[in-house]
Length: 248
Image 1 (cartoon, rainbow, N blue to C red):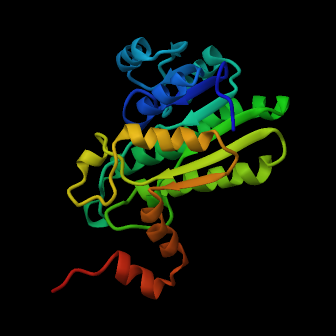
Image 2 (cartoon, rainbow, N blue to C red):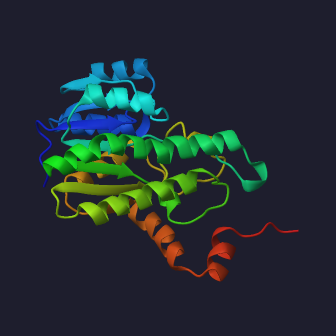
Image 3 (cartoon, rainbow, N blue to C red):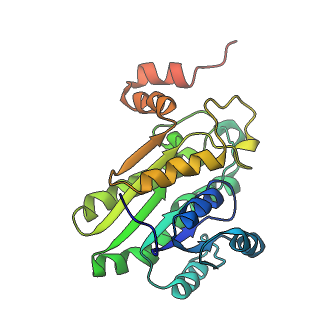
C-alpha cells in the first residue's frame, strides 16, 4: 500500500464536494496538501479545518496564465489529484454553447493544463503519482449530457494515454470514475440518480484506491457494470435501451 505520510499532494478542485472530502481523508493520513480551486475564501476556510499541513493556492484552471502562476508557487510535488469539474444538464435540443464550452474548458482542457504543469518534472525525476477523476458518464454517450459526458470521456482517454506512456517509469497513473455523488452539481439533475452517495463515503473509496497499485476504479461497483456493459453493446441495442425515443 502507498504511504501518504509526509508526501506532498496537490489537489486541484478541492474547495467543495468530493475534492473537499478527499482533502480531509489525505490530510488524516499525514499528507502535506496544497489545495487549489478558484474560490480563495473557500480554500482558506478548508485549510483552517484540515488536521495536517496545508497550503491554499487559488487557481483558475480555465486560464493558462493562472495555472502557470499556481504551478510556480506549488513547485515539485509527489502527487497531483485532479478533481475539478463543472456540469450543467443539457439536451441537444436545448443547446447552450457557452455552457458546453465551459465544461470542455474546465473538465478536459483544465486537466491538460494542470498535467502539463506537473508531468514533465515527474517524468524527469522518474517519480510521481497522478490521479485523474473521470466519470461513469464518460463510458458512452448519454441523453441530456451534451458537454459533460464528452469532456469526461476525453479526460478518461487522457488518463489511459498517460498510463500507456508511463507504465514502468516510476510515475504512477490512476483513473477513478465515480457515479452520482451528492453535490451542488448533481443537485441540478431532475431525475432519479441510482446509487447516489455522499462525498465522505465516496472519498474513502477514492483514497483507499489511491493507496493501491491498480490503474482504474469504477464505483459504485454494481452501478458501474451497467455503464461498462453499455460500452460493449452494439448501437442497435445500446440506444434503444439507454436512450429510448419519446413516445408519440
